Amino acid sequence: MTDPIRLNLRLTFPGGVPLSHGKAELMELIRETGSISQAAAKMGMSYRRAWLLVDELNHLFREPSIETKQGGKSGGGAALTAFGEALLKRFRTMEKRTMKALSDDLDWLAANRADQAPDPGAR
Image (cartoon, one colour):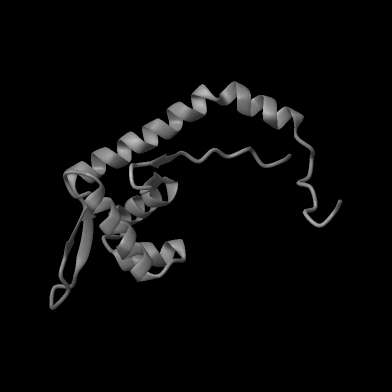
């Protein structure tokens, strides 16, 4: 059995700022862990990179998607705002709708692809 063809939805806003599966995964992991650093670690990225993505998300819309609280005695943390929850849900719904809309084409591509990916060094 071969792996299925995957589809990744990427929305590009004016100015070139993307909203894609990576930011959606980061949001899900922040919701799950309550921490930007733990979410970053689970994704194999640096805390700085994750923080920059959170900052980008928070400035992409009228409302922030992720709220943070400073560390200290009680510890820091992060959580999705109500807007962030709505954004994540809507993005995941758009992904599902895109997959459904393209399912016949993806099936056709899968039925007609070679069993193995071509060797990039072979000519």
